[in-house]
Length: 290
Image (cartoon, rainbow, N blue to C red; front, side):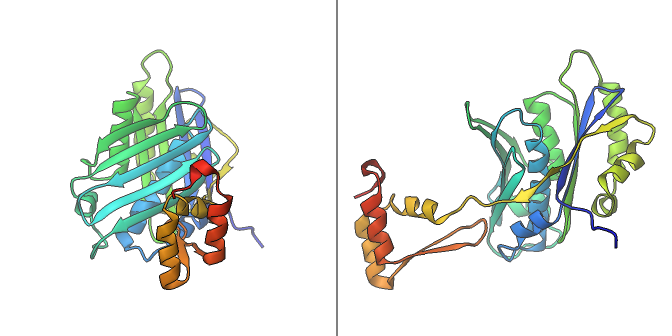
């Protein structure tokens, strides 16, 4: 029996005869974990899939340990779509919307006058945030705009998502001296020909062979991409402590419990009166709102 290939991996590759690097990501289980937390309309599922692929691809370019988030916001029926990730390729995400969203809704129809915020948060060092308007037809084109503005490096991005899988490819000129645009343009044209079905059904090595069979490509070992939510009962307790005990006691008196929910994974954390007393009794003095 043939072993089923993993669909949650990120692959990095280099071209031996060109100053260009590439990445390819294929997502299935991790993507399903994100979209199964809520009853998302089809168009939002696809946006979250493309955002997941994007975040994985961008995370692989980080030169530090820390977090990254790609967030879409706007004044349309979809007010938010965000994927958070880290250098370990652990991703989570959520979207907020109001009303009916057509299956084929465009970015502008979903987000209205919208923008994309990319936030890089190193474990050690300063936080960086970049913003670009959602002025192009696709998320991939918006991201290419971002790289053109922020790094001035020619970049090609391809993104795909349906209700089961998500995938993406990333191509970028290496930040070296000299002009390598001709090399990049050639490889970008080849990358543009990749089809959704290929990325969804083929092994990464086969995809790269089909696209770049006349090139010398060095493919590195894959990195697993996983869904991981950082919520916990302890984090929820800390959030409760930011509210005055008087207010919390009033909720306990009325409904008998405090319930905290995680938007990302739909987990619920329940605190009864005994839990609440312990939360405030054991909290550091500077961590309690009286």
